[in-house]
Image (tube, rainbow, N blue to C red; front, side, top):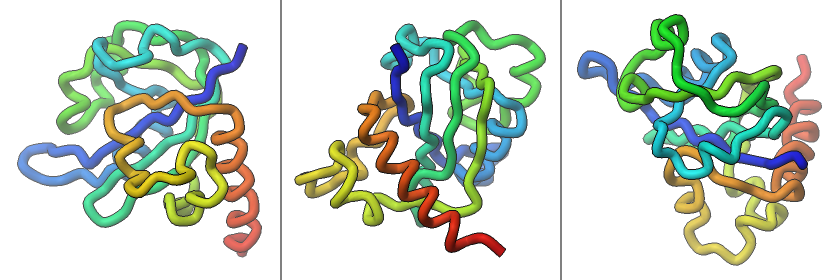
Length: 159
């Protein structure tokens, strides 16, 4: 059975400077893994083939900016993977999950664009609060709604 998740990435701090969450996401996509705290909720439930949406939370904007499919369960971080980690909080994480496919979108899908369609958001006064933490389980329907909005918007963004 395929599970559906939202992986949340926040702004990081490195040597006193803010690394925007979208840059952290770009780094993770280029290296095809996601660093996690071994105490993260749902860590042990992650499985090969699970579908993931990436949710970026920055000071100025919040929204979905990519998707992926897991290559397997979470495992302890290797030294090679640790080499690619920049900034806090990720430098203190000790587990990772690898991706068989992973992409970052060239634009963000905000919660305002989804609030009337995504079951998880319906009737919530402060929907952004749902995406606190690092991993959030969602339904297949929630996943499909975001993907349909992405497909529709990506047609508009074609050169």
